[in-house]
Each structure stands twice: as C-alpha cells, then as structure tokens.
Amino acid sequence: LIFFEESGEGESCDNFTDLNLSHCFMGTSLYVRLLLYTRSNLDCGRELHHHRPASQPLFNLTRPTAFVIHGYRPTGAPPIWVDHLVHLLAEQRDMNVVVVDWNKGAANLNYFTAVSYTREAAYNLTGFLVTMQEGGASLSSVHLIGVSLGAHLAGFVGANLKGKIGRITGLDPAGPMFTSATAEERLDPSDAMFVDVLHTDMNSAFGLQGAHGHIDFYANGGADQPGCPKTIFAGKSYFVCDHQRSVFLYLCALNRTCSLTGYPCSSYSDFLEGRCLQCETFKPASCPVLGYDLSQWRETLLRLRQTRVFFSTTAALPYRKLNYRVDLVTWNQYLRWGVVYIRLHSGRNFTEVRIDHKRLRFEQYTSTRLLAQFDEDLQPVHKISMRINTGNVIGPRYKIRLLRIRFTPLERPERPLMCRYDIILEENMEVAFRPLPCSSHL
Image: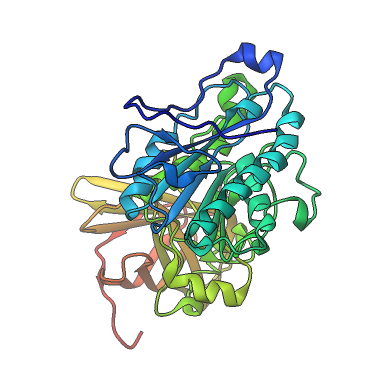
C-alpha cells in the first residue's frame, strides 16, 4: 500500500525529499508526500495527511488549490525550480499550493520504472482530491501543473476524475514511452475542463510532439531553444537545457517580466514568414499570452477545441523579443532575391535582426510582409537602417526601390506606426532613414 505521511504538530518544516545517486542506483519504491504552502507559510512546507487533509489548519478547502507535480528525477536531487514556482503561484492569488513529492519513485536510473509509477501516484492523488471534494472543495477550483513526466501524471488524475478538474498545465510533457500513446495513455484535452501545454523540446528524446491541450504554446517552434548547447560536448546541459526551458519560461511568465504572446498558426515556419500575425479570432482580447491567467481567451479556446500558438524568445531572461510586422511595397525594375537586415537605432544604441529563414523575392509592385523580431526593445526609435543582401558580388549593383515601408509594433498597440516612403536601396548596401508618421490613407 502506498500512502501519504502525516506531519507532526511541531513547528519544524517538512521539506522535499532529498535523495542522491546511490538511491537511484539501488532503485526507489513509490512513496508520495503532499507538501502544503500558503501565503502564511511560503518558506515552510506542511505535510498533509492523505485521508484527513482538514487536519492541517492551514489547508483551507474553500480556497483554490494548485498542485505542482515534478517529473523524472534521475539524480534524486530536489528540483531547483520548485520553491520559486511555489512563491510565484502564491503571488497570483490567495491559494493553497501543494507540491506533490513523489521523488521516491521518480528517482530511479531506470526511467521505465518511474513511468510505471505515474499511474500509481495518480491513483493516490485522485483519492486525495476525492477526500478534498467530500470536505467541501470544488474540483473546478483545482489546477494541476505537471512538468515532463508529471504532466502525464496530472492527465491520469484528470482522467480518473472524468475531466472535472478545473485546469491542467503541462510543461513540456515527456516524450519517451508516450510518443505513440493513445489519448487515454497520456495528457490530452479531455483530462480537465481546460488544458494548456508549453512545448520546448519536441525534436529530442525528452519532449512530446503534437498538440495535447486546448491550447499548445510552441516556444521557438517547440524545439531548439536559443542559448542551449548544440553539441554533445556540453555534457548534461546538451540533454536537459531545451527540456528545462519550459519551466523557466513559465516562471518568467508568472513573474510578469516576459509577456510572451503566442500567435495562432499552422506551423512555426509560417509564423516566421509573417503569415500569422493577426488575432481577430480572439478579439477584443488579442492573442493569448503564456502564463497563469488565460481567462480572457478561455471561452474562445474551448470553442476552437485545439489551438496551436507560436512565439520566439531570446537566449536569456527576460526572454521576450520585440516583434514588428514590416510591410514593404517594392517597385524595382529587376527581380531580386535576398536576405533582409534591419537595425533600429536609439541614440548610440541599436538592435539588429536578420530575416534569413528563406530568401525573399523583390519584384515590381509587390507587397511583402515580414516578421522582424528584435532582441532588445529600444525606445524611442530615432533611425532605421536596412540592407538587402542578394549575394551578388560581381557586376553592377542593382537598385531596389521601396514605395513604402511600414513598421507595426505587434504587442505594443499604444506605440505609433512608423513609415517611410520612396526609398532607393542598392543591393548589399545599408541605407539609413528617419521614420515618419504613417499616412492614414496608405
């Protein structure tokens, strides 16, 4: 029988189970603990009794409750992010935050053993939620936040309770043993009243491909993350960096320093090509933003059933890029193909973007839409410079005439549009100009 340990009545704190590699080598059997944190005890966990949750006076069943569920722990060490996540969740609203500590079970060198324990741990957590419900708690006010393998564990709990859980958030759901799983064998939208998922490592052994929620956020396409090692010589970081980025992006979003807007699109390449920069579907709320509060988009997302949204990030905090929609009207005599470089200048500082995911076509009287994603938000913009590299290194330089160029800040609607009219560029040569207010009729 797997059970939950009851905490004592003393003032000592109950901490996350700290194991080491020797435990992992020998193997651990499943033992689940529930550690309660509230605004009254953010730095001192209190262990809950599985069958008598109300015996802990800090556990108020009338408050909403968020359960934080970690994933596979091959070293046995506590997750480095768990305390930070607890504090940030408590800042969102007055709630119970319960850390589901199944480190004994998750800490095994044999990953398949840990996978087998997710079902058993889910049954235990299901029983606890039923006891909460009998004590007056509403399942609709329960939010399960599962990381990696913990995302599927959350899905199993939700399925056990017939999808009556209020919300499940999956942070890069685990891929191994789940890539060919049916909806009943992994996290899926039917597991809760609302399911949101963030993908950061779909192209390696750790993350899960596809769409598994009412809304799926794909950071940088859901695969390779900026700043993560590209070769195996980086050691452990090469294997875990992309996968762990989901947690750090979510923490940043909860801290309200990121504001990562997701654009509904069929693919990341279409997003980068500027084909998916409108959000009329979600008006008047605009595009969904990663984070805790998705209430203003929830009704639309439930109606659409499954929505994929894409965004790009920088390599480090605060991760957010400054996105501009750039609309060009060209009038050059000769057809040219090229890569576009754009710089925004503010005083002596500048930020540059290279739009090179594919070579762009410039021909007579053609409208072209680009997505320009800058790593820095420089304000005010005093000057803009552009260069179109065509690769032509011999012969004369051809001229490219822009009848109009317009810059629209996508996530900053309060900022004015910037335009410039009738500019002549020589291929491979930079041209600088001061932006002007856009004419209302153009």
